[in-house]
Length: 107
Length: 114
Image (tube, rainbow over all chains, first blue to last red; front, top):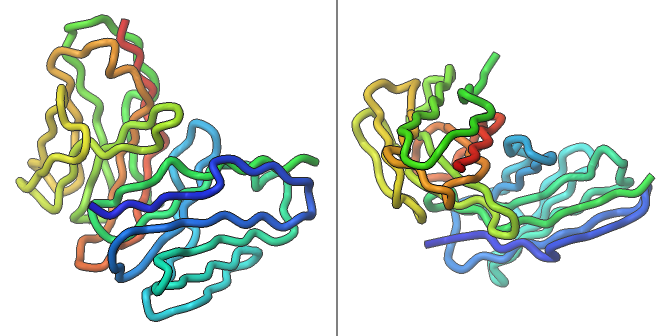
């Protein structure tokens, strides 16, 4: 089954810096999605990128997709303390998620 | 307001006492799913449902049951809970279709089985 695998497992940065996290998957996809989870809460959908797209922006979020490498990256620019959360990617299939990247943004 | 509602949010119970966690969505979504989340293991899918009366096992279905008698509801049933089912549970829903659709998640149910 398809599953996104996020990397790194944990990331700690200072407020104002950019945060980059990566997702790798194993088989072909129609689209890929990124979600955010604040501690103990449900996941919130952030952005969807289709397989024929290479880059997509939404506010301070930038997602890239490289289908030849079966990977995606999520960039959060000018990070804020409120961005502290876990980030997950999900690919086509039975909505399987990886273990996520835990981002900590220090004020 | 579009939402997925889980109840209860917190439950402490004892081994063997049957319990049901309810999940309801108001978005007319075909697809619904249950996950459990444990430290270091991410989200693991328990069961999912593509539509009314259609349910399938996810990765970790043992010890759980589900039903989908109505489109809006997808209860998770633990017939004989055990301590290894202590976890944080999430229900989610989305539109169905070949392409992955954005999922809407409930706020979670924290179960403790003593």
